[in-house]
Image 1 (cartoon, rainbow, N blue to C red):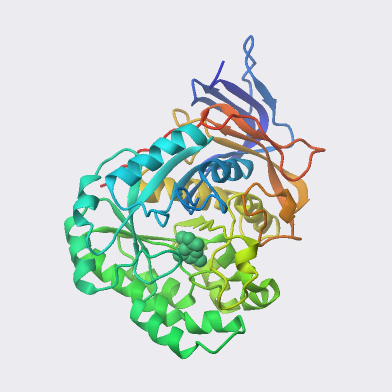
Image 2: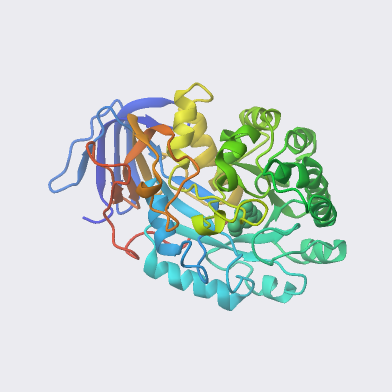
Length: 452
Ligand code: DOR
Ligand code: ZN
């Protein structure tokens, strides 16, 4: 039956321990978690033999740019969701910088409608703030599928921008739910972009959009949250300064995230990668990277996300500074983090904490992110011995490339399960991509978010 599944003899990453055993999903919900095993297959029940495999909750990526509507040459909800599913990601939250931008009820509803026909994973959407759409922000409050308000405090891809204090105050004081900020200070950015305009070496990117740009905006966002008693999520922390400052200044209202590329690359990698490594905020220096790991481990940073932001290789080939900023990542994030765990950077339970439990807690997504009876049957079954070299022509993203091209990652999902149904499968002798099992639109629901 659809939504029914038994996984036997897998190494389960449970909230407080790791145990070999069985897990049963009935009607899309986890009905039984049995460390030690003992669940026998019922007549006609789908069974996956998890011997030698690890069973994790499906990952939740709360920061992707799937480019629909408007930029189908880069991605759409179907290709993006398929890419997510192939990498063990069973829920995604999509950003509003589209054409047209998602800045009112009609564009938000249209996205939700499109998703219902195209995706194979659960999904939620941000509404973008502008300096004059307060009524629109208010009109969607509490709507199913709305995960929060995104504010670009500094400009990046697209034209969404709110940087003046009075406009920010207006939004923080008159809305509810979560505000997610892209924190780079617009004034300093503009000043520095002018100053750096003759530099064509890619090192200039991190020098120009420096840590101070990020720090100024992060401090400002946190002050606004505190002044207006508003829940705030600071997206993609990149600097040691911000991460260290937040240790004492985060408080109860503020959460934050780090991207897989900022954990995995430093300035040397950017020079090697060229424009593929161009992203906002930039990949910085080794000290930043190691501090982000430290602050992730001590709990200052709540979750790990991709900021999956595909651009065509053609656009990237324009070189620095003309090439657009952003890189794909949603199909490699879980294997990448499992590889970091394999290499001793963190534990497998940490990966679940940062990619499953963390996003569910930050955005108030109930009954997801943990292998607990009664929770949704979203699963990633992974083979932690399986090594695959990432290759551009073996990617699901429409832009057909990955910043991890040529890297060997260990730990790929063999099955991705949404509400008890397998949506993606990767055979032992198959290639890197694996194969879709679910038809577009046949799996995944629009998410609801508990706002405080
Ligand atoms: O590098 C980036 N790319 N940073 C952003 O903030 C937006 C993103 C995109 O949409 O391309
Ligand atoms: Zn983003």
